Amino acid sequence: MNEYIFKSRVWLITDDNGNLIPDVDTDQIFHNAHLYITDINEMWKYTFGNLEGWKDFPKKAENGDIIIAGKNFGSGSSRQQAVDCFKALGIKLIIAESFGAIYKRNAINSGFPIMISQNINDIMSQKKILNLQNISVDILKGELINLDTEEKINLTPFSKVQKDIYDKGILLNM
Image (tube, rainbow, N blue to C red; front, side, top):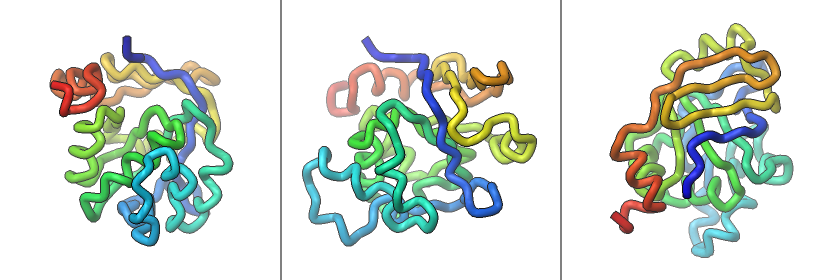
């Protein structure tokens, strides 16, 4: 049975000024220098390897962590490794203002949970969530709760298609 409520600490993918980094592309997520790696279990150590300020992320992340990112996360190429590296690292969910179209489709098709929060930048500017706080996310209700402050934030819930693929584990199992 699949999980529909995730409880974990959160990583805010921010710049030095504390703003969510927009337009993180697939090359920043998983550099093309590592495309020769075909074993998904080896991909984790290269996650964010080309994103300034985040190159040490794989050493700090823990199984079950959640990521909040800026708009257009995963823009660029159709690099499946940019999804698979998070799965290999044990990241359970990525929330962003928006996703690159191909990245979004790759994530959904591979059963990796992603969610949209169209007002995530407003939430970050009001400091409703801080880096490494504990949150709970209900992917069916579209609800994020900051477990440290009880603050509730609305997200776009999974669509029926996204839930069906997630339940099967991957689109090819449909």
